[in-house]
Structure formats: structure tokens, C-alpha cells
Amino acid sequence: MIDFIWLLLFLGGIGTAMVTGHMDKIAQAILDGAKHGVELAFALIAIIALWMGLMQIAERAGMVRWLSRLLRPVGRWLYPSVPPDSPAMGAILANMSANLLGIGNAATPLGLQAMKELQAINPIKDRASDAMCTLLAVNTASITIIPTTVIAVRLQYGSQHPTEVVGTTIVATVIGTGVAIVLDRLFRKLSKRKEAS
Picture (cartoon, one colour):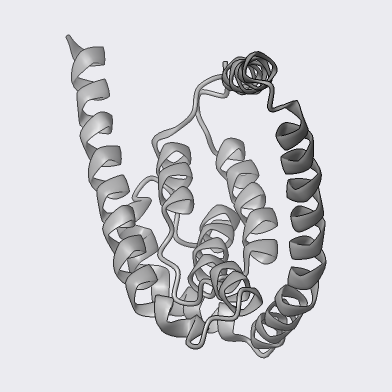
């Protein structure tokens, strides 16, 4: 569906330019957009590599493991159906810790590993369990303390204070995660009530 919308917008823009006689501006805008995209991508490589390197050092220093231990009570509350000593809980907590630190490259494989472990203990294999739905909701809206990519983009565009988004990012992600958890619990109850009736 989204591909169709993009195609419609693209064809609408070209059609409007043809009718109004501004095809040269369309061609120029396409070339300029591609040029800026490439320039931005190359500029971000260095900044993101630096941040990811620092976060990798923090991860290897044991920060993710430390955060995992700290988040264990939260994990038990969020995932009551997952045994505390199962590999699934370990992967979930590591994923939450990586997201907190803004280590997207580490969080993604940990999230996939957590989902795989949850599927292994899922009693109904062809249907997502409650824990799997919760993981998807919490992982998508995850609380982030260090928004690495946003800081990198702000640095690239010459921001005087690239890290000033940290506070608002924490507030926004805390609210987003809270809403995700509330909706997850609400839909879980509605689903069980529907099954019971």
C-alpha cells in the first residue's frame, strides 16, 4: 500500500511539473536530493562509527550485563510468563539494555535472539505469545538514554549543542514506552475476554 502511495505522489509531481512546464526544476531537485543524500550518508559514517565504537567499548566493559541485572525486576514484571532463568529472559534483558544505551546495532540481533527464544517456549507455535507481543511493543518504543543517530545528524548540520536532545528524548521514549505497555496490557485483556466469551 505504501509503495502505491509513493508511486502516486511521484507520478503526481511529475504530471504537475509537465503541465506547468517545470520539468527542469524536477530534474534539478532529483539530482540535488541524491547529491545531499550521498553527502549526508558519508558524513554520518564517521560520527556514527565513533559513537558506536564508544558504545561497543561500554558493552564489552560489561555495561550491558550490569544493566541487564538492574533491569531483571522490570523484566519479571513485563514478562511474567517467561521463566527468570531462561535464555529468553537473558536475551530480552540484554536487548532492553542495548536499547537504553542507543546501541541499535547490538539491540537488533539481541531482539531477534529474544524472539527466537520466546518462540521456543511458545505453547502455540503458529500464534504470537503474550511475551512476544510485549517484546515487540517495548522494543519498538524503547526508552533511549543516548540517541546516537540524532546526535550524529545534529553534529553534521552544525548544531552548537548536539546533545541537548537527550533530555527530551528520554521524556519522549519514557512516555512512548509507557503507552506501549498500557496498550499491550489492555489488548491482552480484551483478547482473553474475547476468547472466554
